[in-house]
Length: 129
Image (tube, rainbow, N blue to C red; front, side, top):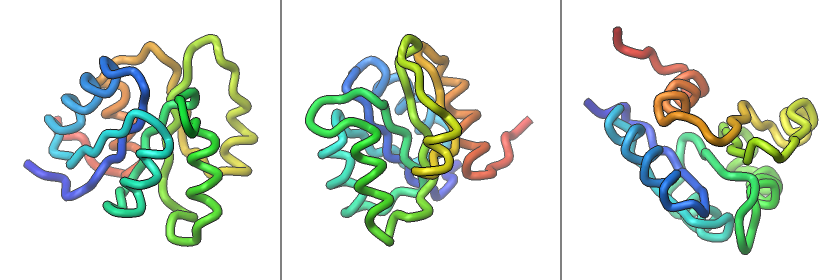
């Protein structure tokens, strides 16, 4: 069962990428993965994802930098974004929502089921009973 939606998942922790990718693919999403913001930017420009799920802290280009780059490009001005963050890292959710259009922030550690539910909610996809 395919949703027809493409998710770009960006995190520098391979275990998180693998677990989230497995859960999202199992739900019918096409999943692209990147290990840093630069790779995610290149994939976004080439593949046009329906939503981006990005870690905040990454090498080369962090999640905030990626988001600023996306929002500066009119093609990605309204692209839904979910941010992932380490539990100890405090983010100003209201500021990120207002300034950069972040739809949701998910603190690590999280369950793959939670990332799936949040993705489905952002894309307004019905969850089968």
